[in-house]
Length: 191
Image: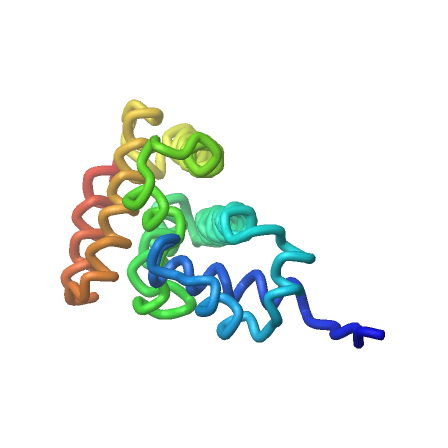
C-alpha cells in the first residue's frame, strides 16, 4: 500500500509562484518545480494538475496577493499622495526583494496575448488595479489632495509607470533613482 505523504499545498504553490516569476514558464522545468516545491511528481499532478494548470493557479495567486498589497498600501498612507508613494515604492522594493520576479509582468512578456487564459487573468488584475487607483485619485481630487486631473488617464499612467518601475528594479536600476522618478510622478499630481 502506498504511503500518503502530506505537504503544505499553499507553501508549494507559493514556491512555484516564485520559480515561475524568476524563470518564466518555459524556463521552469517540471524538475525545477518539484525541487522548489519539495513534492513528488505524483503530488504535483494530483494536487495541481499539469504544469500549465499549476502556472495558471500560481499566476492567479500572485495577482491576488500583489493587487491586495498595492491597494492596502494606497489606503494606508497619511493622505492620498502618501498612499500612492507607499504603493509605488513597494514596487521598487518588493517584500521578496528585487530578485523576486513579477509573475504578472513575466507572463505578459512571455505570452502577450497568445494564451487567452493567461491574458484573461492578467487583464482581470489590471482592471482591479485601475479601478482602485482611479477611485483613490477621485477621492484625492475631491479632498483637494490631488490636482484636478482626468482620473482614468492618470490611473492608467500610474499603472503603466508602476510596471516600468518593476522592470527597472528587476534590471538592477539604482533604487535611489527609481525613488526620484516616483517623486517626479507625484509632483505631477500635487494640487
